[in-house]
Amino acid sequence: MQRDGYPVIAPANSLRDLAEDSAYVASVLASVKGPAILVGHSYGGAVISQAAAGDPQVKALVYIAALLPDKGENLGPLANKFPGTNELAPSLRPVSFGNSDGTGGSDLHATRPSSGPSRPTCPPPRPL
Image (cartoon, rainbow, N blue to C red; front, top):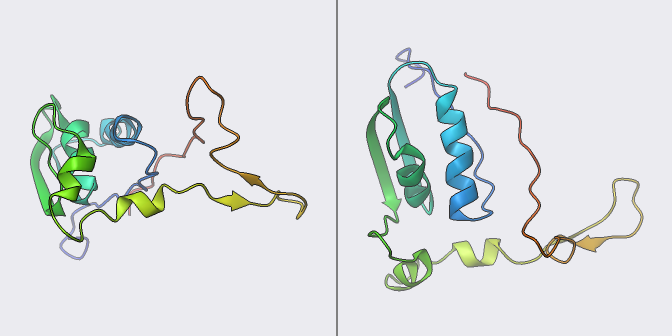
Protein backbone atom coordinates (compact mmCIF):
# COMPACT_ATOMS: atom_id res chain seq x y z
CA MET A 1 0.00 0.00 0.00
CA GLN A 2 2.81 2.38 0.85
CA ARG A 3 4.51 1.63 -2.44
CA ASP A 4 1.28 2.71 -4.17
CA GLY A 5 1.25 5.99 -2.23
CA TYR A 6 -1.26 5.18 0.51
CA PRO A 7 -0.41 6.35 4.02
CA VAL A 8 -0.27 3.46 6.49
CA ILE A 9 -0.43 3.61 10.29
CA ALA A 10 0.05 0.48 12.41
CA PRO A 11 -0.68 1.34 16.05
CA ALA A 12 0.49 -1.18 18.63
CA ASN A 13 -2.23 -3.22 20.28
CA SER A 14 -1.52 -3.23 24.02
CA LEU A 15 -3.77 -6.26 24.69
CA ARG A 16 -5.21 -4.73 27.89
CA ASP A 17 -8.87 -5.43 27.19
CA LEU A 18 -11.30 -4.87 24.37
CA ALA A 19 -12.66 -1.55 25.69
CA GLU A 20 -9.23 0.00 26.25
CA ASP A 21 -7.68 -1.39 23.09
CA SER A 22 -10.54 -0.21 20.87
CA ALA A 23 -10.58 3.22 22.57
CA TYR A 24 -6.88 3.60 21.80
CA VAL A 25 -7.37 2.62 18.15
CA ALA A 26 -10.32 5.03 17.94
CA SER A 27 -8.08 7.82 19.28
CA VAL A 28 -5.51 7.05 16.60
CA LEU A 29 -8.28 7.00 14.01
CA ALA A 30 -9.42 10.44 15.18
CA SER A 31 -5.99 11.80 14.22
CA VAL A 32 -6.32 10.55 10.64
CA LYS A 33 -7.46 13.05 8.04
CA GLY A 34 -9.76 11.65 5.38
CA PRO A 35 -11.20 8.21 4.69
CA ALA A 36 -9.74 5.17 6.44
CA ILE A 37 -9.72 1.40 6.10
CA LEU A 38 -9.05 -0.63 9.24
CA VAL A 39 -7.46 -4.08 9.15
CA GLY A 40 -7.57 -6.51 12.05
CA HIS A 41 -6.16 -9.98 12.61
CA SER A 42 -7.33 -12.39 15.31
CA TYR A 43 -8.45 -10.40 18.38
CA GLY A 44 -7.80 -7.24 16.34
CA GLY A 45 -11.02 -7.92 14.44
CA ALA A 46 -13.05 -7.20 17.55
CA VAL A 47 -10.86 -4.16 18.30
CA ILE A 48 -11.32 -2.53 14.89
CA SER A 49 -15.06 -3.24 14.94
CA GLN A 50 -15.51 -1.33 18.17
CA ALA A 51 -13.03 1.40 17.24
CA ALA A 52 -14.82 2.11 13.95
CA ALA A 53 -18.36 2.10 15.31
CA GLY A 54 -20.09 5.31 14.28
CA ASP A 55 -17.04 6.84 12.60
CA PRO A 56 -18.13 8.13 9.17
CA GLN A 57 -14.56 8.33 7.85
CA VAL A 58 -14.17 4.53 8.12
CA LYS A 59 -14.95 3.22 4.65
CA ALA A 60 -14.13 -0.48 5.16
CA LEU A 61 -13.12 -3.05 7.73
CA VAL A 62 -10.85 -5.92 6.68
CA TYR A 63 -10.79 -9.07 8.81
CA ILE A 64 -7.87 -11.46 8.43
CA ALA A 65 -8.50 -14.68 10.36
CA ALA A 66 -10.20 -12.41 12.88
CA LEU A 67 -12.77 -12.64 15.65
CA LEU A 68 -15.97 -10.64 15.30
CA PRO A 69 -18.37 -11.32 18.15
CA ASP A 70 -22.10 -10.82 17.74
CA LYS A 71 -23.70 -8.14 19.89
CA GLY A 72 -23.53 -9.35 23.50
CA GLU A 73 -21.20 -12.26 22.67
CA ASN A 74 -17.99 -12.57 24.70
CA LEU A 75 -14.63 -13.08 23.02
CA GLY A 76 -13.46 -15.97 25.25
CA PRO A 77 -16.26 -18.40 24.41
CA LEU A 78 -16.13 -17.29 20.76
CA ALA A 79 -12.40 -18.03 20.52
CA ASN A 80 -12.89 -21.39 22.23
CA LYS A 81 -15.36 -22.48 19.52
CA PHE A 82 -12.54 -22.74 17.00
CA PRO A 83 -9.47 -24.88 17.78
CA GLY A 84 -6.20 -22.98 17.59
CA THR A 85 -7.72 -19.50 17.79
CA ASN A 86 -7.39 -18.87 21.52
CA GLU A 87 -3.80 -17.70 21.45
CA LEU A 88 -4.63 -14.47 23.28
CA ALA A 89 -4.82 -16.05 26.75
CA PRO A 90 -1.09 -16.85 27.04
CA SER A 91 -0.20 -13.25 26.20
CA LEU A 92 -2.28 -12.02 29.15
CA ARG A 93 -0.30 -13.98 31.78
CA PRO A 94 1.38 -11.89 34.50
CA VAL A 95 4.90 -10.97 33.47
CA SER A 96 7.69 -10.29 35.96
CA PHE A 97 10.15 -7.57 35.10
CA GLY A 98 13.07 -5.87 36.80
CA ASN A 99 13.44 -2.21 37.58
CA SER A 100 15.24 0.01 35.07
CA ASP A 101 18.27 0.19 37.38
CA GLY A 102 18.56 -3.61 37.38
CA THR A 103 17.31 -4.11 40.93
CA GLY A 104 14.29 -5.97 42.17
CA GLY A 105 11.40 -6.96 40.05
CA SER A 106 7.68 -7.07 40.21
CA ASP A 107 4.65 -8.71 38.73
CA LEU A 108 2.86 -6.36 36.35
CA HIS A 109 -0.60 -7.59 37.41
CA ALA A 110 0.21 -7.56 41.13
CA THR A 111 1.05 -3.85 41.00
CA ARG A 112 -2.26 -2.77 39.52
CA PRO A 113 -4.52 -0.79 41.83
CA SER A 114 -7.77 -2.44 42.84
CA SER A 115 -9.77 0.30 41.11
CA GLY A 116 -8.71 -1.02 37.71
CA PRO A 117 -5.74 -1.60 35.48
CA SER A 118 -3.12 1.06 35.09
CA ARG A 119 -2.12 1.69 31.54
CA PRO A 120 0.92 3.44 30.20
CA THR A 121 0.13 6.14 27.72
CA CYS A 122 1.42 5.53 24.24
CA PRO A 123 2.53 8.26 21.91
CA PRO A 124 0.45 8.51 18.77
CA PRO A 125 1.91 6.57 15.87
CA ARG A 126 3.72 8.46 13.16
CA PRO A 127 2.48 8.20 9.58
CA LEU A 128 4.93 6.37 7.37
